[in-house]
Length: 357
Length: 170
Image (cartoon, rainbow over all chains, first blue to last red; front, top):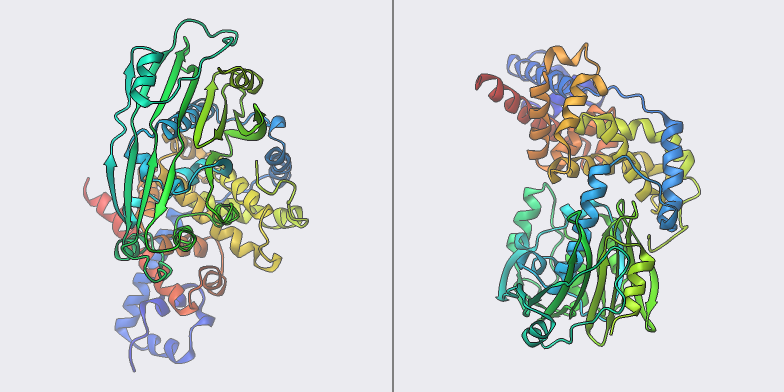
């Protein structure tokens, strides 16, 4: 008879009852298979030692932590401190920088993020863990990303120069919050636009490399194009002694996305099904308005909490770092997205936002 | 924060108490650190709490989620190198048995090798060594029980090559 497969030999090592009698009998009398079995045993023992992890976690302590974390998700204001101090310090800065990068359309990295293929009329936070953020699929694995217009973000002399460079009225801050003083530095950036061309072949390769099988692409998606545009944008930045942004006020033409050929929702649902996106995040994204007018703003759930507010009658999203060090408020009105962020409290950024002229 | 605040499933505590040690064990096999493994377990149970996974499939779902999340942590570079040191000092891994075979340096190779394995192989390997049966691994990964052996075998072979290659390069 034919030799049993390596997989069968492997199962014989630790689950022999799962192996057919005929295979067992063959192996017992076959020098080739006995040798294969010995190799499988040796590798299994080595792997067992390499992966040895005899942990006896404290279930009560674990449950205590989880039962506190669950309400924290619903009511971020009661967020407890976690021991990840370094991460706490770092991540909100990244989050705020991310908001500003989004607003000013800074860089091809933003263009490569497919989350932005939404025409923006409102902003909705999506809770994702920072691991998910890192793991969000880079679109370059699924096709070509061509940056058509570079935003060329640069520092300009003053508000007038920023307005001239971008055509956007620069928001003027009424009263500066406590601890923020002096004059801001102004940054201006032009329009960013990028075209993403979906490639079923590249997507399948990326999936295979991750050990996943790609779901079949809907007809017409292969070669389909998505154009992302964002900006121009402008930001006024007050720095602080700590190096964290003291206060940032930014405004930009909100991102828009268009697709060619394939209906937008078909393409979106397929993109959502690509390997690498956690199911929960995908289902949250699917729940966004069918007309594609919402920009989901990914929020690293462990470090940043979000809540709703209004600024001059417009719904706004308030983001606060769980350690209370940083806060931001973001809203969209008439296709213009504005953000106020800084090492401030939520009340302070809201106060600045509502006082903008 | 969640789009469905308050929608935590009623059986969360029951499932948590039954499955927590296993879920931490799965993540610890990937990460080599109990602290990190517990962080991963928390993350996984939070997702589970908001999911509608049938209770009968909870253990498999949680184990797979723990393996994926832990592997994501490995790949994201989010881990702190110091954690590895702590693990080597006996934070999680019993110093007596495994240490005779696998040195701290080799532990790093193990983590690196896991991160490089095709995802399905890595998950199957970790689940099998976490005590899931072939049938459970097959169900959790939508494989046939026959191909679980093949997948695990390939993963173990790759792991051995990785560790031996390293040993012979010294």
